[in-house]
Length: 259
Image 1 (spheres, rainbow, N blue to C red):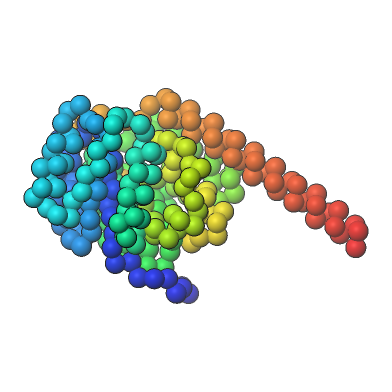
Image 2 (cartoon, rainbow, N blue to C red):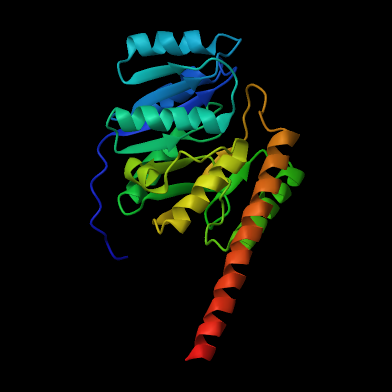
C-alpha cells in the first residue's frame, strides 16, 4: 500500500451518545480506557430520564480523561454527534470515534480502527466485508442491513460496503473538509450522509472488519422513522447522483460532436 503524508493521530476523542444507558455505559467506558488508555471519552447525553447523565458525571469526576456534554433533550443521533464533533475540534483533537453506548461496538477493536486511520481520513468498522460479522441478530435484521447497504452502494456509486455502520473514526481535518453545516440527517442516515460527503470530497475511506454484538442490556433505538428517513434520503441522493451522471454524459457527447 502506498503511504501518504498524513499528520500523525495523537489525540483521539471517543464520542458516546447516550439516552437511557445507565446500565451499560460504565462498562463501555471502562473497556475504552483499557483498550486505548491515551484516548479521551466524551459522553453525549440527551437528558436521559434514567439518570445516565449523572452516572457519566460521577465517572468524569474520577477520571479527567472523561468528559460529559449535557444536551437539553432527545434530539437524535446526528445532532448528538455534530455537537461532539464541534467540541472535539475546538478542543484540538486529531480524530474522533463514533461508538455506541450499549456494547455492540467492542472497544477492544478500537486499536485496529486507529491503526488504519494512520493512512486514511475515515475508517469504518464494517460488518459486511471479509472478516466482519454480527452476533445475536435475527435473520430478518441481517437481510435488512445487507440489503440496505447494497442498495446504498449501487444507487450512490460508492465503494463502501457498510455505509450505515456506526463504529467509525474520522480525522478532524476530514470533518472540516467535508463541512458539517448542512448536515441534517439523523439515525443511520447520518452515517450514510457523512460517508457520501467524504467520498465526494475525494477523501480516503477504508473499511476494517469488526464483530458487531447485539446489545444484551437496554432497548434498541431503531424505529420505523429512522428506517423511513434513511430510505427516503438515500433514494433522493441516488437520483441526484444518477442525474448528474446523465448530464455529464450528455455534455461529453455534445463536446465531442463540436470537435
